[in-house]
Length: 268
Image (cartoon, rainbow, N blue to C red; front, side):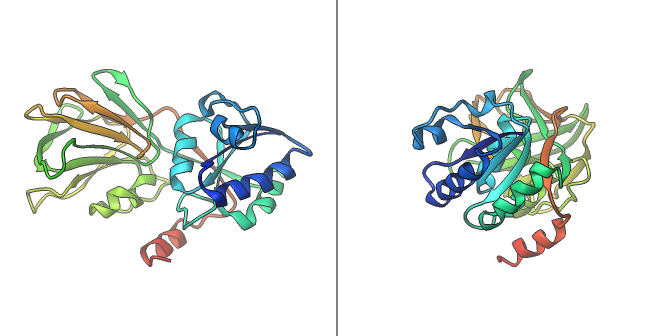
């Protein structure tokens, strides 16, 4: 089996876990390391987007896992090496046993919706969690218009608009007052950040629809994808989000979404 590994080389716990798993994997499997990680081990690596492994190991927190999903179409096993990683499947001390199960094929594959993001027809990075359109300056409100296909849904003044997947419904969207949506569903959740209108409420749209966000008065803003990449906008662009044909593929050993929710909300 061919494994790819991505981890943040500046996080000691992630490096320690990577070193341990490398020595275990290389005896029986081919292992590819992401370039920055490989340099830390004085080895040859390759860019994450160029890897074609059977399984990608993302060692770290949710940011590392989201980056792996954004740049790779491989099946991803999230290994948490620090604080609670909501998207991770196992903790670092469980990783060796998890690798044995993966090698035996003793797991299930959970595929989840990703967002396709286009700006003036140019496709940007797909998102597993969310795309956020927000002000480029602190404490500057913007006047947004939200459309579903050709229907006008709402015009609202706010600091920004979060367009999330069900996976991302438990992240930034939830902190802004959005609903928790079971990740087995395909849907698009739209939540305003600090809306000026108190009566404003989040919307849940079918994944087959196109959600359009634009500014009624063009002013500089940003679109941020999964917290990993951002693109500067003049504010006159046509921003469209819909379901991507590319699915996020998680390796799972258990079905415990609601247990994770309880732990997260309790701050455990």
